[in-house]
Length: 84
Image (tube, rainbow, N blue to C red; front, side, top):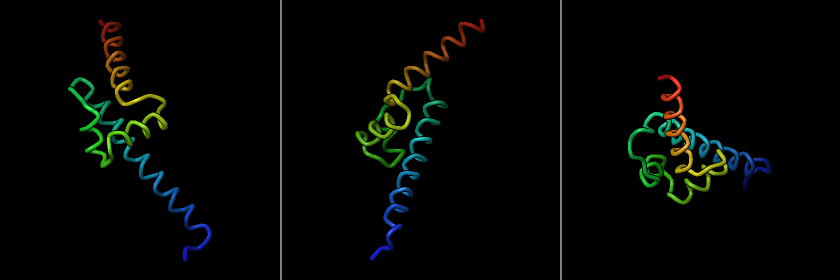
Protein backbone atom coordinates (compact mmCIF):
# COMPACT_ATOMS: atom_id res chain seq x y z
CA UNK A 1 0.00 0.00 0.00
CA UNK A 2 0.99 3.60 -0.45
CA UNK A 3 1.95 5.64 2.52
CA UNK A 4 -0.67 8.27 3.44
CA UNK A 5 1.05 11.26 1.84
CA UNK A 6 2.13 9.50 -1.34
CA UNK A 7 -1.20 9.76 -3.11
CA UNK A 8 -1.21 13.51 -2.61
CA UNK A 9 2.43 13.74 -3.73
CA UNK A 10 1.65 11.76 -6.89
CA UNK A 11 -1.32 14.01 -7.65
CA UNK A 12 0.84 17.11 -7.17
CA UNK A 13 3.55 15.67 -9.41
CA UNK A 14 0.99 15.00 -12.16
CA UNK A 15 -0.33 18.54 -11.81
CA UNK A 16 3.18 19.96 -12.17
CA UNK A 17 3.80 17.84 -15.28
CA UNK A 18 0.57 19.18 -16.77
CA UNK A 19 1.63 22.76 -16.01
CA UNK A 20 4.98 22.16 -17.72
CA UNK A 21 3.18 20.88 -20.82
CA UNK A 22 0.85 23.88 -20.82
CA UNK A 23 3.78 26.26 -20.48
CA UNK A 24 5.39 24.65 -23.52
CA UNK A 25 2.14 25.10 -25.47
CA UNK A 26 1.94 28.76 -24.45
CA UNK A 27 5.59 29.31 -25.34
CA UNK A 28 5.01 27.74 -28.76
CA UNK A 29 2.02 30.01 -29.34
CA UNK A 30 4.14 33.02 -28.37
CA UNK A 31 6.93 31.97 -30.75
CA UNK A 32 4.78 30.88 -33.69
CA UNK A 33 1.78 33.23 -33.39
CA UNK A 34 2.16 34.40 -36.99
CA UNK A 35 1.92 30.84 -38.34
CA UNK A 36 -1.30 28.84 -38.61
CA UNK A 37 -1.83 26.96 -35.34
CA UNK A 38 -4.49 24.43 -34.53
CA UNK A 39 -5.48 22.85 -31.25
CA UNK A 40 -4.92 19.31 -32.52
CA UNK A 41 -1.30 20.01 -33.40
CA UNK A 42 -0.69 21.81 -30.11
CA UNK A 43 -2.29 18.96 -28.17
CA UNK A 44 -0.33 16.33 -30.08
CA UNK A 45 2.93 18.12 -29.35
CA UNK A 46 1.99 18.34 -25.66
CA UNK A 47 1.04 14.66 -25.51
CA UNK A 48 -2.54 15.47 -24.54
CA UNK A 49 -5.98 15.03 -26.03
CA UNK A 50 -7.38 18.19 -27.62
CA UNK A 51 -10.26 18.47 -25.17
CA UNK A 52 -7.95 17.97 -22.22
CA UNK A 53 -5.59 20.65 -23.54
CA UNK A 54 -8.44 23.16 -23.91
CA UNK A 55 -9.80 22.43 -20.39
CA UNK A 56 -6.40 22.54 -18.70
CA UNK A 57 -5.28 25.64 -20.63
CA UNK A 58 -8.44 27.51 -19.64
CA UNK A 59 -7.95 26.53 -15.99
CA UNK A 60 -4.31 27.62 -16.02
CA UNK A 61 -4.49 30.80 -18.13
CA UNK A 62 -8.12 31.90 -18.04
CA UNK A 63 -8.78 31.57 -21.77
CA UNK A 64 -8.83 28.89 -24.44
CA UNK A 65 -5.77 28.31 -26.62
CA UNK A 66 -7.67 29.84 -29.56
CA UNK A 67 -8.50 32.97 -27.56
CA UNK A 68 -4.88 33.20 -26.41
CA UNK A 69 -3.62 32.99 -30.01
CA UNK A 70 -6.11 35.64 -31.11
CA UNK A 71 -5.13 37.98 -28.27
CA UNK A 72 -1.43 37.42 -28.92
CA UNK A 73 -1.85 38.33 -32.59
CA UNK A 74 -3.86 41.42 -31.68
CA UNK A 75 -1.19 42.52 -29.20
CA UNK A 76 1.51 42.19 -31.86
CA UNK A 77 -0.59 44.23 -34.32
CA UNK A 78 -1.13 46.96 -31.70
CA UNK A 79 2.59 47.07 -30.92
CA UNK A 80 3.47 47.31 -34.60
CA UNK A 81 0.95 50.10 -35.13
CA UNK A 82 2.29 52.02 -32.14
CA UNK A 83 5.89 51.65 -33.34
CA UNK A 84 5.35 52.83 -36.83
